[in-house]
Length: 175
Ligand SMILES: [Zn+2]
Ligand SMILES: [Zn+2]
Image (spheres, rainbow, N blue to C red):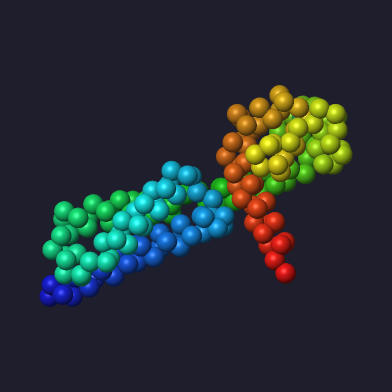
């Protein structure tokens, strides 16, 4: 294969990686994609580095493949692979569950306090507490809010709920 053809292929592959990462990064900053912060940073950094490489001539890419291009491209590819392997289905199901829980007077699903007064349904009853981060879920008290954070999975769904809530607000604000 001619070197120029090879260089074009290399350029196309890098361009593809870069575009894919850019779409995810944009979706993340717009609140449409919830990512572990570490992965979001990795994707954004990788995308920037590959975009910088793409400013070079195609033949330069080929000439400097081993030293400059391959490590950067491999890192971005690894980050993308991690993104594709994310349990998106599981995250969506968790968010559904958490959204359903936000309608309960106590969002901790194992709450034994069945007569709990807290929450929107009970008109913000005595001792009720709202998660101050997402402001989407209510608890009958401190014990349940701590338990839900530590064992109930709110630690992971809190952020997704915050993002979902912001998204709802934003779309409601649009005419
Ligand atoms: Zn409770
Ligand atoms: Zn929360």
